Length: 340
Image (cartoon, rainbow, N blue to C red; front, top):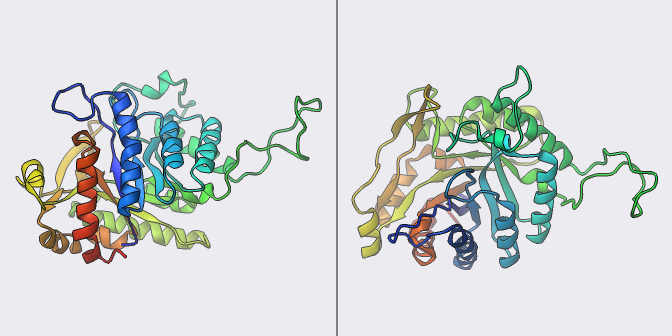
């Protein structure tokens, strides 16, 4: 295990039990948590993106703010739903945020997950062309996004421009060199993991995937990672790809931890259905004393296969408690898994 980061869904609710009661709370606390995580020595601060929900939505203002407030920690997403994205405008936003962060962006993108509304991407002005599904549209948006991130000119300049142009065809600006290699695909199946590998994207594997064999979640996820790496090698890419997995892991080190998570929770995989007909398997959560956690996590085959572990955090419990959750893992659990 080379890197450990946090993954926040950025929930908010006006409930008096929540420490995050508004969109402003969610955004400002996300920045504060990224700063705190960096100070604790974590490697990354990643944020989930959901539309039409009381969660983090448009990611680039947040990523830019986190980049401006931190110096070393990776800043990323897991994941941006590409059905909603104009890939040209997204490339400009991503380039700007990456330059502000000094080249630390790690953008997780994907087809997206079940939504709060029906065909929400239509409200953003997108519709699949004839014969194309919304998933096909997301992959097409991704291909365009990846192409323009190469930084090569493609647009014919105006012969009478308002401002002087460099010679040749023009590219989107601002351009951030190296960002193309820091794009990740959130894959729910082995086939989409292979597709991501062929296009030279890193792999993000979440706390759920489509059930393709009936075996335990971590076993299926480990197999997905091996399929991805084999496809990467076959594609002939020269750099080493990165792979992350997400987990809910809580070290019980004080009374607060016992109060919130000491009842065991979901200690077994769960089976559900996505979109009404796709059988999905959801990975278990972990909550135990640190020495027990280390032994449990050593048997997780996907964690062993990945180079990056993203810890899902209960952001509505506030920045201080979430910093405590991260610190407990980094101090009492991560060294036992080979981190640093």
